[in-house]
Image (cartoon, rainbow, N blue to C red):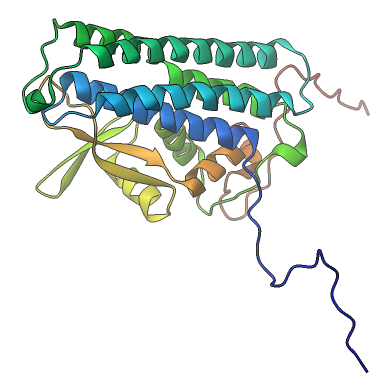
Length: 285
């Protein structure tokens, strides 16, 4: 007796196939790419030699231009309502893509007047044409991480359930969510000296202990010497960046607080209504 053969499309092994990233995850990852790009330009302008490769910076801007339009395409493939918060978010992303194209042109022009290779270990002259092109390119993408994360908040509130992430992390609370959101915005840099860390946040009260917990949970990593210095020619700082798990976890709680962990014995809050949704009328007794 022969054993029936398996269908041609049957998998040979049982493997876990990773789901494609959700639109919000794509946006958060894109914000991280812009933060890394901006950091490189800042190090090129203000950091100590050796500086980042100007050719790599131009290639990075060109890639970001493509990735931003790809994210817009992914968003438009969702069943999103044509309401002002969503349409405004998409318009801001389109504006960012065009600004990035302009930054690419400035960085391409900078390639034509960059200092000789044998001068890469000398401090960059801020009055040179090369520095001017780089500075203008940096200004065009300065607000990119903040623009993208704010757009992600508005888009996440209107995504259909099938397009949302449901990655939950034990211990996720409002403070950790705020810290991860500030990391996504490119707002947290770290310096270390004699085993002590000092955190430089923008808006959220994030301390070194909080960062250590988030890093231990695999939600973020501190990339050494990748952020600009506090002063011209100073030592570079470490940049806090989301990991893949941190990106998924933040995309889950970015506008849905009912995914946050609750203290034992507390009742589960109802999911927050999407912005602009009509309130449910109470039943009169």
